[in-house]
Image 1 (cartoon, rainbow, N blue to C red):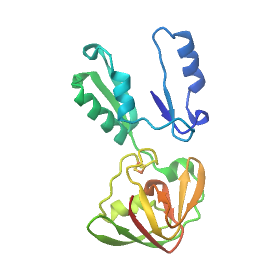
Image 2: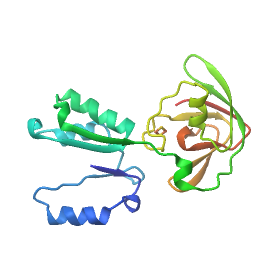
Image 3: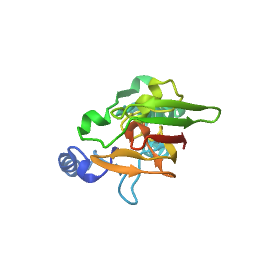
Image 4: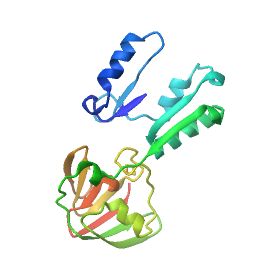
Length: 196
Ligand code: FES
């Protein structure tokens, strides 16, 4: 199972496809493309489908993914009683700004954040992602990958403008849009967010 945004952004795809072709008797590769129509992100059901019918006593599972995906896979493996010693993983996090090294047209801002029980007001610096600022100011928000992949940090813009890194591109978002704070920066001086 290999998840990426698009076929073009899938590292080693050519080599993997050749391997699959040359060893079709024992190698199968399923791609999941989050930005391609009729494809999708990997979810629990996909993991269950792959495990169905397997001899789990003799199955080794290896996962290299953002922490949230690793946790999700492990929860499925626990539900089918896979021996913990048969589960190997590497989890990673990334910083969107470091990866892309682009100039973000962002602003210092006041951000109001609303969760189920409380409203928070914080000051954010234009060079920091909204998620980093929310975490830094002890605002309770779910997150995992910090790279725009797991969608755990999703928030709705109630007011204001945001600029987000979508792959290597910048996208502007405004009132009513849902954004991922881990790859987003303030683009107006006042912003209101709520948990999506
Ligand atoms: S933390 Fe994973 S998408 Fe934001």
